[in-house]
Length: 219
Image (tube, rainbow, N blue to C red; front, top):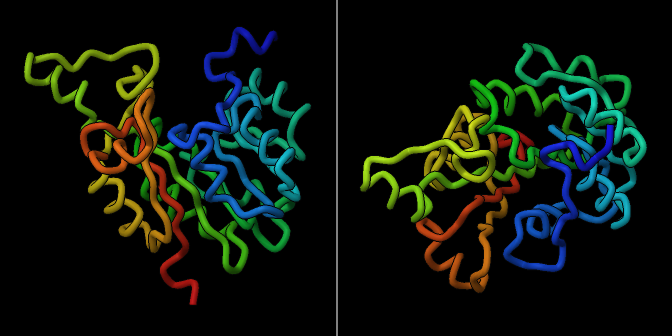
């Protein structure tokens, strides 16, 4: 299958400080081993490898996308993180654990992200972290639509029709805390505006929220 037919295949804008992929990569230390959850065609993982990640293992449920990702990443697996015990399918490639587990625009597609985040801790190396990006449903466009009685799903974006869960900055942070993580870094992403302005008015202007977090009991 041509990558052009795959919905989430893209060329990441890694030089724009307001872009979510730039922010995600900035939270992943050089030399990390990475598990890319929902890797799709592996474009972001390939960028990580170019930036000296030691290895990137990608998991997804889209077999067509994984066929493309397999050419770009260290390893790929068909794994459904909504199935209990999904981490057991990765024990043979986890080694001593991953330094980073990346959930890039994944959790909003799941029925219940809480057990997924809790389960992920089993695959983290000592001192490891998760990096999570998630859409901000409190963005001004969504608020403005609600004022007019509109909450209309779209083909992509915050109200992507495949999104099952919606988060604000506060509820995203609460999810990570409830899952047993301590947030060690956070940022926000948006489009066509200076990054300082998006940060200053993040509740209204942020399209995506980005967090790095470590297990609260890591010590």
